[in-house]
Length: 170
Image 1: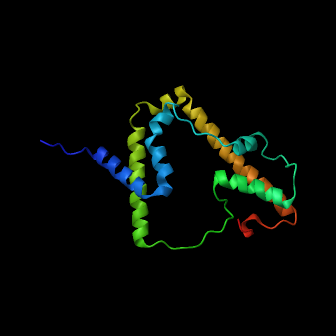
Image 2: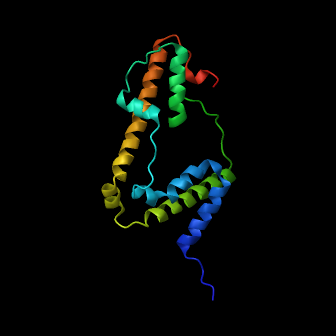
C-alpha cells in the first residue's frame, strides 16, 4: 500500500519545484533550505570587504573626492546592498495573474523556511551557543554601515557640483 506524502513533504516538494522556475528567488529558496546549517554555524554568510570597510569608518572622507571616484564608491556599495531608496523604478502594475503567482511563490518559500527552521529544537539557544546569532548580528551591522556609508558619499556628491548618481546611466 502506498502511503500519501505528509503535508510538510508536499509543501517542500512544491517549493522546490517553484524554485526551479524562478531564478530570481533562488537565493531565497537556498537560504530557507539551508537555515538549519546556518543555525548550527556550519554555513556563514560572507560579509563583502566593502561593507567591512564601511563598518570600520562609515564617515571617512575618501582620498579621491572627484565626482567619478565618488560615483564608483556608490556603485560598489550598490552592488552588495542593492538599489538605494532614491533610485527610480518603472511604475508597473502587475496583473492579477502575476500577483497570484508571486503570492503562491512567497507562500511556498515561507513554508519551506518554516519547515526547515523547525528541524532543530530549541533553535534560539542553538543559534546563541553555536555563534550563529552573533554572526547574524555582525552581518546586519555591516549592512547598516554600508547603507550609512552610501548615504554619506551621496551627501559628499551633493555638496559638489556632481550629477546625482541616479541620473547617470550605469
